[in-house]
Image 1 (tube, helix red, strand yellow):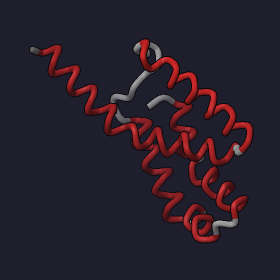
Image 2 (cartoon, helix red, strand yellow; image 1 turned 90 degrees about the vertical axis):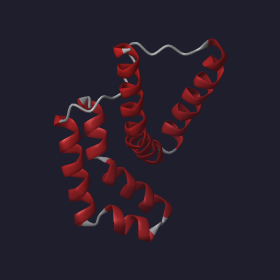
Image 3 (cartoon, helix red, strand yellow; image 1 turned 30 degrees about the horizontal axis):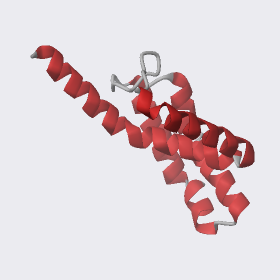
Image 4 (tube, helix red, strand yellow; image 1 turned 180 degrees about the horizontal axis):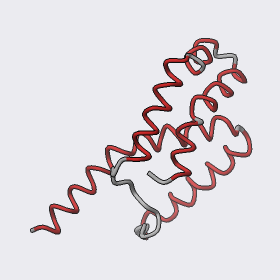
Length: 117
């Protein structure tokens, strides 16, 4: 896992707590500042940072022509959300990144199996 992504994952409880506090979501704020949750995030991100888990890289990422408009709209929407509600955007980005990790591993294994054939 790249270091900036690891830093975002480590800060995810803070982002969640700040957004929950802004929105008066008391239960979410309590969960986000619960010591066991924060410790689990720190330990989990530490293991991910030193692991050899394959993650998608945008260096060689090519968007098919039919999806360019959707990618541009999504990027613009995220930029607007980042300006309008920073903590929500950062928390969402961290959660999306964590949820994409299993798909990255699956994709890597499929590509490796195709290369071996």
